[in-house]
Image (tube, rainbow, N blue to C red; front, top):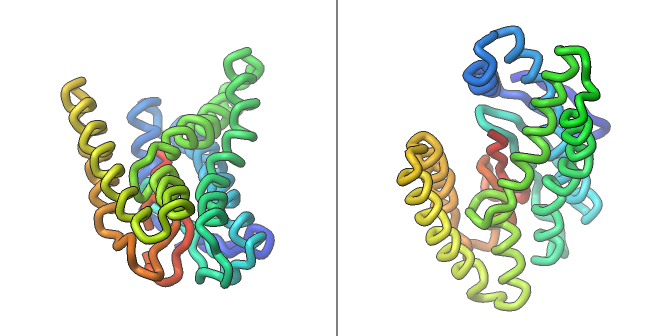
Length: 232
């Protein structure tokens, strides 16, 4: 595990994060190009997680930590006092919001052929894919993605006792629909991937007092309030 700090926030990168290189290689067919694009992906994922981490700290969370692994990252912290569903919603939404804010200008510059040098272009591609593309997908209402956590928190605002359970049902239905559509479209791997994410959401107990507000995937249940991320 590689460890370092971004400001006061400790970051850990698990060796399984190298799986990102395999994904990048499947598109570039060049190991060096994949590694260069991986730099942009790493920066984009870290930016996404910093959105969660900084917002959580703003609402009083202490010991906020970021961990990157296989297909994404997770922000964890002991739930602070006064962490309302509304604040949980904002924490879950903040990751993609911050990432997209920085990613859109890079995407526009890429489309305008601003990056003449190939190395910079590859980093830019990796960055906007991890910030814009994954940022938007991560708002899909499937637990434990950010969107699923946002849905849970939003429903808990209006239905404190049943909101989490209702969100779980909606997540299951949305997952089933997405898996069916992807499979019928011939995208078997994507269908399996979405099914895996949906299964992770089913493992959470939405009525448990320590249940997280958010996301993709990642797990010390009593300490994790940030969403799990599957950036690719």
